[in-house]
Image (cartoon, rainbow over all chains, first blue to last red; front, side):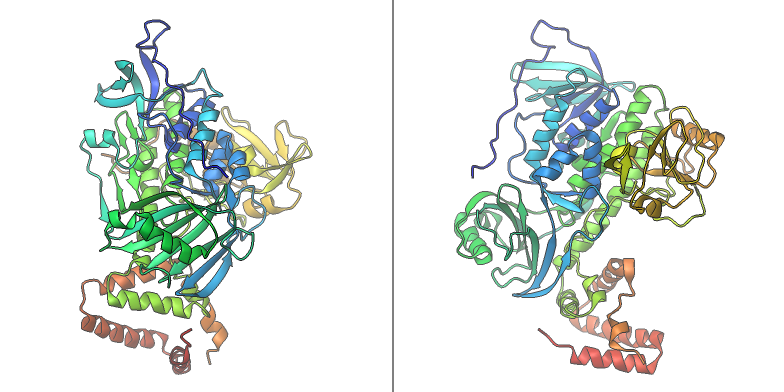
Length: 547
Length: 69
């Protein structure tokens, strides 16, 4: 099986430099960085009719698998952007997780606990595939997305009402103007550094080694993809090890090396091969990629700096445990794009962007808290911490409470936006699983007799979703969708299995944001109320003075 | 009398991680001796919180007999 074909993207002289063609002088949005975050932002804006120019210093997808775990919520966002189904088809869906302490299995668990969702809790898919799919999707918007590879932003200036960017290319240098700039140039963000913004947090001393191994035969006892995690494995002196499967028969191995290890020495085949053999046995394998890393948990104090908008790793970095880096970044994209589109179209005041800052600073703080806790559990700092950790593992063979304390990464779930500026009080009174501030919860439904999913039907626009016996008023700018309703002049879905009704509650009306978060829930929705919620979005009033 | 089944039940729920990290933070910077003393104080105070003698005896017995595998 050949490895991934890293085909370079086409690099063409920008219209500003080729002497012909018409060079625009000013763009609504410039995006710095064509990783998953920048590309997703360009596609998201394009779905809303907003043009963007994407500038990247490279011309190839990321080398090595890098971000591989894509969470359910991320897949639902990618569903809206048009690549979710492709990712699901190519990706490996996790099924069984096994946890070992030393050489013995502590317990195993099902990673797909609930039926009735289009997307599973997680899939594994190499970052390069996601970038490739996004580039291909972006090219379906030739009038809206201007992808420029080998276009490196080296300088920028904030002029108050617009940004000037200096761009270096193999063909020469040029300048462009943008109303807004989305900064997604990664953890080491040159833009952030140029602006001198403090990036504070906690640095962890442990070194970790990731290796991608190509192997025809499965190292698991079955053909079902599993996820194996070891505390204090016998085959390796470090504190932990992780093995899971990616597409194309590639297996990711993560080894914790400990703080004293020499990363240069560790990242050699002589050191790595015996460890891989200890995990996979005598099955033939090929080393595809490896990397030794240390990590930080850190974030910017603010993600919005006038017209410079920080999104993804440039704004926040976390430890890899729990898969909250790439997944957190995609949630940033989901959060900011509808707001930025509304501001650019003149539908909302610029202060709407401040709610991106409020909501995603909150979300990333939650991600940092969770990933720091996982890291602390995996890297005990003292003999007492070590003792507690091992007794948790010991008790967990029999006691469920101890199992729940084991922390090898709490898998990324979207944060609630309840009690943030835009969200309203719950005015329903029924029993329901989805609350104000939550993100839409999927359920299987029928549309005109065809099977489909709620997440594929209700995202992308302001939507009033009514379940059963509730009247939905007509409000400009709000799409209405009824579940189990008839004789109405808007779209209806049928809840054949009863899951949507159970999850949303009979008789409730949900007002959803374009990113699928619940703004408000009503027992008896009226047009005036909904209009005032929308007015508040177009000109939000913050309770606390924002700096 | 507390039986094994109720001891198996998770009562920390969503707060497990917060509890564990709060406990680890309490030990941060302590010598081993100080940590042992802290643990002893904690066991005594938590026992008082539990209160019921049968429950306490049952928990102690289970912990003592718990097999290291």
